[in-house]
Image (cartoon, rainbow over all chains, first blue to last red; front, side, top):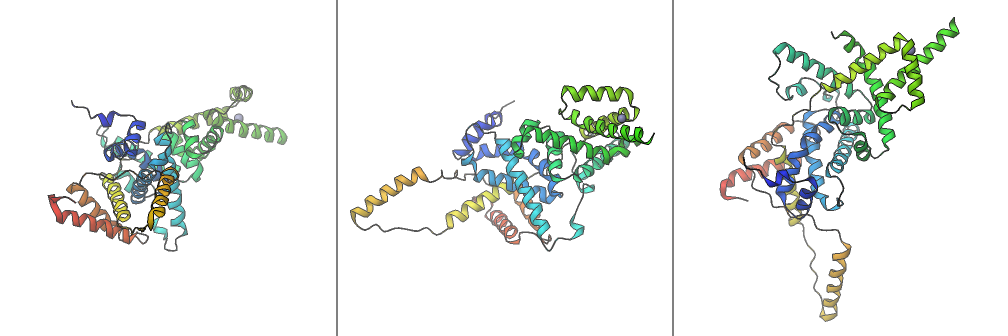
Length: 199
Length: 172
Ligand SMILES: [Zn+2]
């Protein structure tokens, strides 16, 4: 099987090439990271359409600012920072807008579930149960405060280590751990009846 | 009796907070020992430990969402639109008078190459394939109904996509 050298290259090398004007390298960076960015901003902006827009805008901003990325600076952390800032601003602008209506507030519901990666493994009953679990957990995460939600999404849903989250969010590792602990307290309160009802 | 209950309720609240702290790696050896001793003698807090473990396991069952296909084409279209807008912006042209002015311009240009930020990378994307044109047009149509939609942006995307569709294989 032929291997595309661009897709095998490290982020740092791709960034270097993109900085020199190689658009294909930037496209590879997009392919590599856009799922993470989409999943990081979705719980903040809460609708698929907004998550799409913010993801796209984050990459456009990143492309525009590639020249400011220092050598050795991790592209993904930098990109997360851009995306999370855009998502927070997006929510703030939406809240500030006079046009906001209540029915716009789409929670993690069917729209989200339809987008899940199809898993042919379990039977229909088991799949329905999994969907229910995911919807309940996502709804609980969405109810967290923005600071807690961010660390839970990055750490639990995306597997980002706390040290990396500290760099992305711009606070100490201790603060990230403390937010994670309080967020878990909150999730335990929200999900306790659900886990106790489970067999 | 009342005082003893209140004291044990306080200890349990402390222990339950420590359970989350421990799960996040925040517990030092002293508090860890205290918690272990409390758990050894308190059924309610052992139960809370179990609830927390099950909640954390629940979080592991949430897979990442799949973004819709074709997102890249929106990024590409936005970058192209920006590059075009920059290219179309009016430029100031100087008419240097005499050798002194010419020399001054050279000095200024040399200084600018040190002081100004590096130029953005040139946009040399490949042509958008037909499925991306359909994606952009559909997205623009769907998003138009949103009260906060960026109508100017959406119309530009739809126009760019439509124009490219009209041009067909002949390129940009
Ligand atoms: Zn206790």
